[in-house]
Image (cartoon, rainbow, N blue to C red; front, side):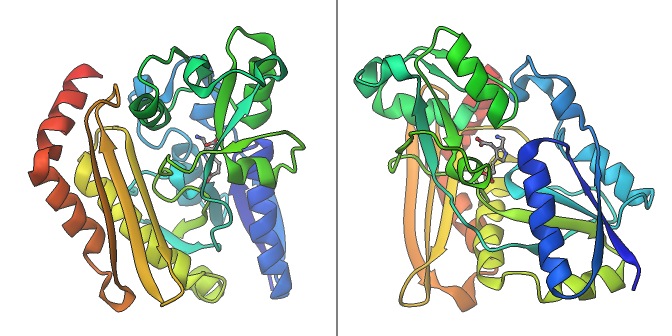
Amino acid sequence: MRSIKIGTRNSPLALWQAREVARNLQNKNYKTDITPILSSGDKNLTQPLYTLGITGIFTKDLDIALLNKEVDIAVHSLKDIPTELPENISIIAVLERDYPQDVLVRKNDAATLEMKDLKIATSSLRRRAFWLREFPNTQFSDIRGNVQTRLKKLEENNFDATMFSLAAIERMGLNIDYELLPTMISAPAQGVVAVCARTEDAEIREIFADINHKQTQICIEIERNFLSTLEGGCTAPIGAFAEINEHNEVRFRGRLCSLDGKNCIETDEIFQWNDTENFGKIIAEKILSNGGKALMTEIKNTL
Ligand SMILES: NCc1[nH]cc(CCC(=O)O)c1CC(=O)O
């Protein structure tokens, strides 16, 4: 059997994710070969992502490598993959979700500050708005870069804390203190590793059919349908998290907030998972007609 060529960004987190997919393939006796590729999102490390105006900034260089057949698959954090995929590229598998939560990481000298008094570095519109919803007077600064870079910037700069995805911290095996933030709702598909391939590549699709984690796939399809229905191509503070509960039902929590966190629309619903086809879309349409449409327009006009 030929070796399966795996494309990835070259950040430590991306490489970990690529190795995780490689391990799954090796368990099925396939040979693997990892090709790191520098992405546009990793070249511009100063501007917040929402100002760069390019969707798929982390994924497009790998899409090109896929279409040029330089690699057979591309491995990504699913939350970085736009809901609209390029023609001829498909998500062919997801790995089981590990840690969906957001966490707060403080600088040592901010250990005893109250949450409402923290100066926070994050360039995520969602994390800002959701934090402001609870602590409306918070000061924010921008921070970009991979997990290690952001930790270094935290030490070197005049802010008290930053937020990460717990998945990133766990995957990197970082031995740092963090606080879980249960009142946040994570980004759609946070904590999920996805495999992209050329849509036409039946051989690769076949190989990944039983690596794919079905429950995770159901959850992320709801989250991503929710996202794409709300956004219509614009970025906004949106959280979406679906999980399968002990009764084998799907519980979905979603939230859309204004940028300042003052105006939020939420949903929390349980439904049967054989009935998930259009669920994300239906819930998002309900939110849009309950004030969400005006909120989205306001956000678009501000950014
Ligand atoms: N925003 C960038 C990004 N994209 C994926 C992850 C981590 C993996 C994941 O949460 O799926 C991160 C880091 C973070 O959010 O702190």
